[in-house]
Image (cartoon, rainbow, N blue to C red; front, side, top):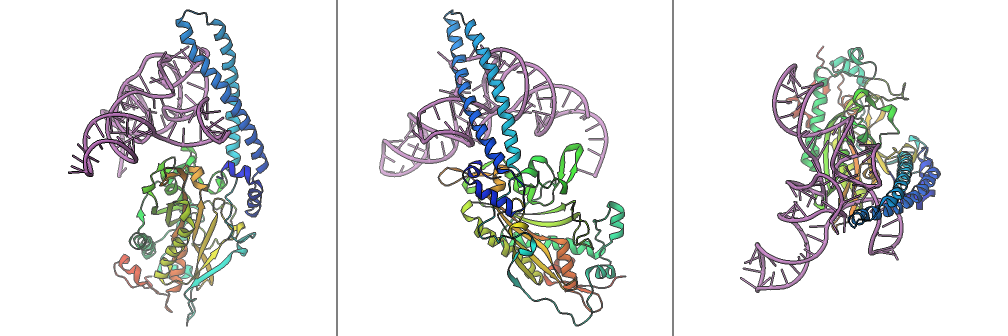
Length: 425
RNA sequence: GGAGACGUGUCCGAGUGGCUUAAGGAGCACGCUUGGAAAGCGUGUAUGCGGCAACGUAUCUAGGGUUCAAAUCCCUACGUCUCCGCCA
């Protein structure tokens, strides 16, 4: 959420941001309601002041034995009017709040302006595309040969877009999760945290998934709870509504969670195998920091996510997202795309974003700075990493001519020392 | 799921209709005192909105209601605790 004052004073900037992000938000309606609200608030405050003042005098007058019936009758009218203004005020405030929730964050000045992902800008790459001296196999074939996945039976259980990791596949996935968690905890000093994956509406609004992405969320109607699409939601909202001490910052959390996405509107895209599924696992980095440091930390987090891919020895590239591909709440985002050498394409495995104070305002995440002033802090998050696509790139890159799969050194301790998967059919 | 108790500021805690713009205490900050520290004394110590400010206003879990007036009375929801039931 943007600061209402900021919108008031920078309406044009906000309009441009809405346009560049392909969003729909009615800035003029907001300005109009804001004006109305402040006027009404002024009226309300004055009337309440009068009511409070006279009500306080009543007991004294009574004690003196004066007749207060005239005052009571007059105050009865004031009371009616206070209630009427108050309910109007509540209505306007709620409408204004709803409109404010539809205004996206403003992209950072560095962010390339562009309509969609084709306008994303290449930043750098690491490693080389794997070249095979044999006919390489795509991940689905490798999974089948090594019995790592069972798509048919997962579909039987839950429908299309759900997968089952089987045998060594399940173990490899778990190895990836554990490796990533340990790596971030030990090398990057993250604090591990494990939170509910079923959260309420307020929590979803806090990080900006609601109201915009309601159709993309799984919703448990009976309890009005939502399955999180990323651990970002519960971790970022963890301190919601609180004022942290200056010493409490920065917060650095690493959290593993399953992620649930309905993927409404993306039918037909990347539906093959593990690329786009309704439920997947992800290790997420979340930071709560002082505003001045957030861009420095954004770069640091990109490096931390890259470190995982480097440790796994996988070629990847880093992109800066263009305005049109930037998420609703983000001011600036880098994507990490890993190379899947048999499928011959880059797969997005991490999105690292600075939300600045956008989520803080929604979730009311504040801290007291060294001068004792209460300020909104800045939030950032990034995948470190999502497992299914990492899994694809990994088995494709580490395949041998016979279809067996070598295990990268760093994962071996998580697989009981195993150094390769052999066709176990 | 059933029954009961409770929900006050950073924390503890008083407050059952009006001199409460929330007592008192703890903690914290600053000052006095001291050779230094402790103790003691004094002052200050929530957030939002409007205002240059003085100040006004809102917030005692949340939302409704009663009243000239609500932390206080009534209703609903949520949460916490205790007991019972069920259950990993």
